[in-house]
Image (tube, rainbow, N blue to C red):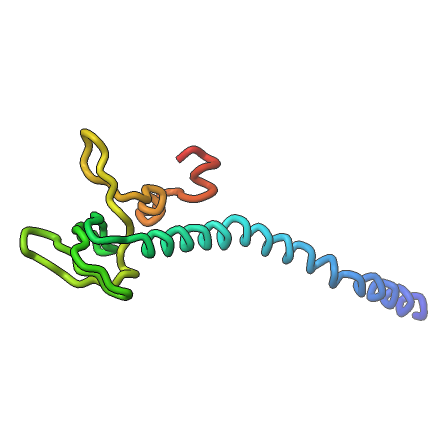
Length: 133
């Protein structure tokens, strides 16, 4: 009987050091999430903020709703877009998805093609570069 109690007590003593070994995989998973998800999203957000600050009258832009227009008046929080001949709308500056770059011989495309593929369900960011998509 004493042998059974001694054997059970020895098993519990070995489990005391297991707390740190369980913490290591958790920290490793957090590091992976940080470098694969959080950090690229922060870079994308910083680029978008820089683009919003650089907007000026005459720039062609695309809104998050898919409306393309030309900035005719700019403010701190809102901009006025001309989306057709004498059709003007006021849009929140933060709702502008990107500038439209006109390429020679091609139709207008949004400036951030990487952001558009990610929004459409494609693989963007680090994994897109890794797998060439």
